[in-house]
Image (tube, rainbow, N blue to C red; front, top):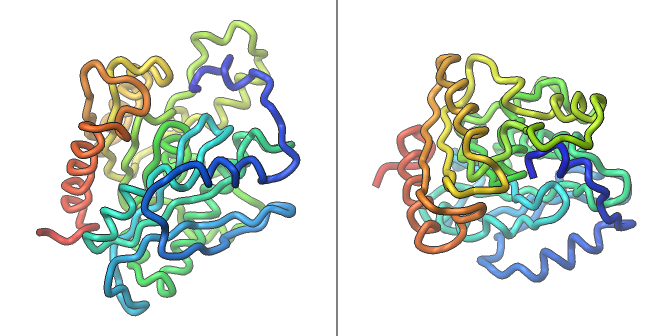
Length: 285
């Protein structure tokens, strides 16, 4: 997924969001409390799926987390983080999962996915009062391609939807990244043109890192053949070089997507909760 060669492969196209909706229906998990449309792209209405705590009130100023699903930018569903979202809601957070355009849809590119990710986060921050959250306490997270999108919130300042209010910051208070595609890799790019490489560099978070990166925790399996661990280690090292905090949680022998399988699901969730508490985004026990 992170190689330029993989990104350059022809992708099946669909005429609308029907295939995305069908895929979402196949995924089971705790259902969201509500859904909100944050943006319209052509004839597609893009939604935020929201899990609210019991006793939620609009006047609350809770911490929140915005999740982005994986799927190689080509597929996936907001339900991918439904279990984590429901558990965090039980602990008092407002958890949100983003629907974004997919490159399996006609004419959609990775930069379009990035634009949607940033639009969604801006919508959440600008509607903080409505959502009962503190606009300064919004974390972001994601897995694989979704980890890439979460990281772009803090790095890709120049990739924005023309209709966005750029005065609304996309910088999260913290990042939870699960086997994230944070450094788009060209080691297997034998069939990729220089132009394609340049396009991918524009959306590669590692190549746009700067000082002031949010505190970050990264979960990764050292047997991941989809997102090579050295690309993630390079990202973490550069964040630290720039004066930031980036914790690497490496799981020996685990492959891509391991965090959604037991026993890793429970372990990564517990460490995510501890990290959010350390950042002051989730109340102490």
